[in-house]
Length: 121
Image 1 (cartoon, rainbow, N blue to C red):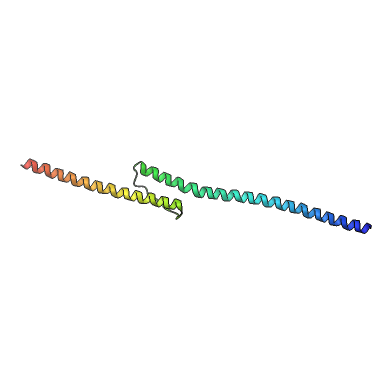
Image 2 (tube, rainbow, N blue to C red):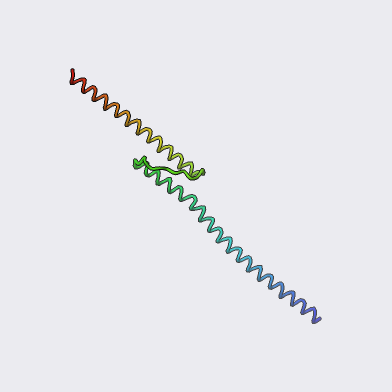
């Protein structure tokens, strides 16, 4: 009978140790997953906010009339497509400004020729 009590006590102690080590393992896994989740959340947040901030900066420059900025598209996701659209818009605006300048130069030249011809008359 004494031997059975010792065996039961030993098994009970062994079960208590397994429970304690299981609790410690679960707590450490939970802490690890929370920390890992925080790292992934930070990475995801930066992956979204940094390109959007860059796109906002580029859009602000274009809105202020600076068409000389070089726009770098580094990704093919939504923010990359947004930056590509801003780059295309910037290029289109540069083309329009160039055409307007050419047109005004032509008008100035024609005006000077008309003025010169008028003086000759």
